[in-house]
Image (cartoon, rainbow, N blue to C red; front, top):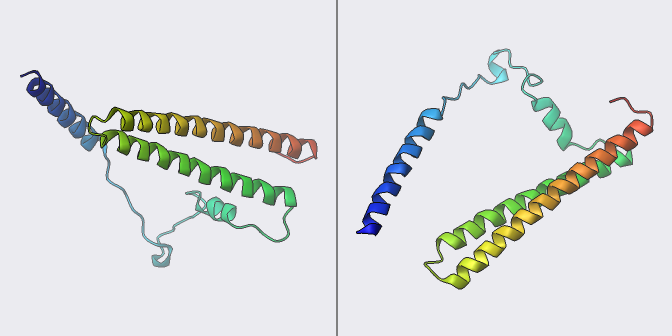
Length: 141
């Protein structure tokens, strides 16, 4: 009897949360492509800056190139740890009451969270040191 009550309460709470999220979703106001003369300005939406970050020009300073490579590697590692968190959650949900598998999943999630914290700290330290070197070298910014 207690399991049925918990299940009913869970389903009610789940439905309320689902409806709440459903009403938070706003329609996407898409714009026409630049071909149709819509006045699309990529600089307004940050697309120009994003595409500039993806390219590494040949005449750039080696420090900038190394910085972009480090940033890309840290971003990739962040994605890997995020996927590990999702995988650990999936293992936990499909454990079926197996305590060993649950503990293994919890350990994976804890390790992935610690990894994410380390990656974020490495990114922040690298960015801070890079800015300090850039400013000490007479850069503007």
